[in-house]
Length: 525
Image (cartoon, rainbow, N blue to C red):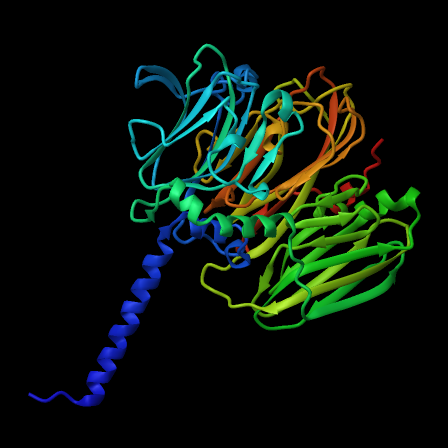
């Protein structure tokens, strides 16, 4: 029986394509320490809705009395008392702080509390003895070569061992974290991803960490010394009159803004802060506006527009601002800056672009903001940082505020309600820990994931700004995301809060409760 040669070649070609597609799909459904390190600095990963899709959770030691929203115990504040259970392990009684089933990845850990004489243990995949034991409850003592870009020691480290840990810890079946001194309480946080059961995750080992040591240091160097894309610049510069606007169309086609620099000059220092907040930046992609934020807030500076230095955001505190978020579009993009003030200034815009392959799960960059003034603390109120409807990936936020009270305002826990949550899947222990530090007062600091650009008084009275951008700890959502902070302070008093959210989403994804532009002109103290 003869088979036509052309038909045979065609069938073999189809078979090869099918095998190749299956191989690629298996590769995308395999998660390893190496693939996670690559993802940490991948511009392409930033812009995609995750495939395979994972869910996220933030487990903390928050007060276990916080069970029912709206009742007084919801704001219970003994946030070092929560844990999962007690259990016996190898003749020891241990407190279980974290116990999640896989396949999954721990993406961020915080330890704090000055726990000398204590051991933290990490068990993987149901093992009987911990694979990792850390003395003194100090995640910075993790027994692998964790580079500086993935480990941040808080300003109070010398007294409390407070550290934030971004080195990914993948696990195939489960991960459990315990502490062996059960007679005291501990502050603890761990964020994780959970993948579908058909995703293969290779569990962390010291051997793998040692093999990938050079890769980890290369990733760390990228995080701590971010590269600014400078090819294919498109520029526009003009004198921006009071109440004037600058409008700029970008080249058409499948492209992406890889860096966006806006520089303001010709304004005196007395009017600088008001102008930077009165410049409303709008970005539209493929006919839909997805970004609308005051310039000072868009770059994470907040009120007063001080300097910022982190992976995605940069500002010199004198008028030069830079965003490194990748912003893809299919056909067209437009930038507009509206000056709501009566202050004239020169504005220069420089956008550097590259070609971009649009895929089925590519998303658009979004940012929007809101502000509320005269909010009383210690009255059972939760401040809504922003509520998003639609599909997307939560990428970060900025909180800029004026604290009218005499001291610390940020005891309140953060809550992230994702999709159909009946209880927040992310429940933390307070403003300071959410933004990667320990206890108050807090001074100006920066790391690759954000920082505190402004702190006017060591008491925490007056102006304060925090910014946090997310790396592997991004939070995908299919229908909605609601982000809140409890308003709890040491002494009571009012606060003026302004918040900006950064996310990637479909064109139809939006913040449902933004403030009007004119809120940027509110006269703060």
